[in-house]
Image (cartoon, rainbow over all chains, first blue to last red):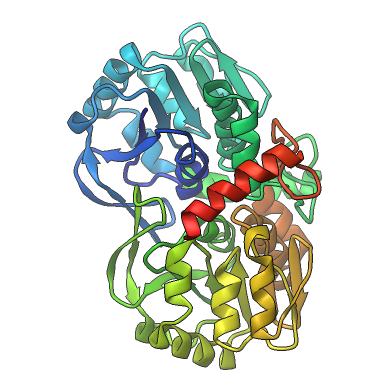
Length: 212
Length: 212
């Protein structure tokens, strides 16, 4: 089972690495980190690079496509013809096409979210409608073979859900135990519904400075 | 604030990337991925490499040290004189010295857990006593400036806790919202207390095959 995780300049590392850690545990999984060129690809913080071992044309027909989000770099990627063409072609034969966070904007730009419900990072939720998608305030949204996840850490929940679909509940639960995913956040401000207004304001300001 | 995240051949990516994603949002954070040599460092699955932009001697006095775990490679790293010497020296002046998952075995081998309560991946829990540490079945264990986290995904909770200690509750909550960390795992088998016996057996077999 070929899994392609797209990386591009300015992607967010956890968007990609959360799903990778889970999907790589699936039976017969072969995970490929793909980018326009083979070599190091820098994340949005600029403090980390992940290696792309494959270029897009190396993996034309993955079974699973994972598109991570990011900040400004995601907007650039969503206008990149080479990336969009690869996603459209891969989606034709994929079993699952997925995004995490603002990766949904790239799927949207490729035309894949037209007429679908979808989710993305809360900061970018108003951007989905331009691609004909209906923003849905859920952590993971499945529409046929297309699955979108909310911001950054939501890719972990999305991938566990997908692991259950692909390999069954027992294997997914085994993977959950292997990565000891029994989350206990010390605070409870992980969504717009839960965070105080003052915290939302701080996060909006921080997100704005990353995007603009 | 200098943050050093050690990477070594066979580390687990999420152990490192979870804390990175949170700590890099702290005010004045400068995150450094360090390894014995500058260049790509392959994870335990072999499907992914992260770049080490710095060698150990480039960052001798980080404020925060993060040691991720892994499988067989972690055992090798825990016997590597260069790595252990760097950790001991860094710990002398660090404000916080932390581990995720079996990274605790490396901290232990460096002598840092002697007499302390600590946690690690459930599969490795019997290994802590050889370093004079007392295994404690908690997701995050703080002893003075030393913080250990349970397996893989627990590094996210550890780093949020640490963010709160360093920058205050408001900043930590802002970061939680930025990474939309409102976890909703589709199953509830993330710990030995919660998983069914049959799932534990599957996970033990899978972990054993990774370690031996």
